[in-house]
Image (cartoon, rainbow, N blue to C red):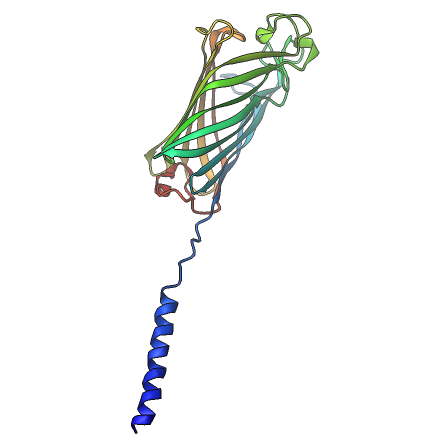
Length: 307
């Protein structure tokens, strides 16, 4: 009997040891390094009049846009990419078709964390528009004042990025190169967008660039995204700051329908020595998506893009 119990005891001990070893196997981190968030929008507006004493002109308009944020987070690495595209038109009887929105904004910023929430970073951005713009409300019979890559702004620089959570990001680049491109020959005159000589197609500047993005949840279905930037050219009149602000107020009705209000302010001495303002309001279809959980512990703060 003793001879039988000894091997049975050894077998039970071996199984228990194997079970303990199995339970101590390392846990695989299933959190995705890449996170893709985005919003696709299509806004429509229309007005029709028939024998209306108060007057008015029949019109129909549309505005389409995408806003993607592609982020890579792993260890000390942070790589954020933003794609903003938008274009819209309005057709009014007796006046014709005019564009109401036109934007191309692409940016990429890579950082390596050196202290909590602080990153040594470098990146680039491109800003321009799709189509030509004209002095008289985008009337093609009026003088042309802009076009694709006329102007176009390309910035590249290095500095630091502060990102305490997913709702706030600030980047400071004390060394930033900025090129202004004017690739439309009709607009290549001295003074246009700071060009030095007739026929020049670009202007080089080098200076300081600061940018910030702050996202605020006002209510469950109402959010505000604030984006601001400042640029100072070390090489020529550093006191002439290029200032810009963009605000997007999103009021979500349901999963597919929302209202967007946008406000853009810009001051650039090389464009026009006045503050530029653009405001849009639209109601239409909007689809948000989020393909996976970010590594950040502040994922719950991303209320600006609810499913």
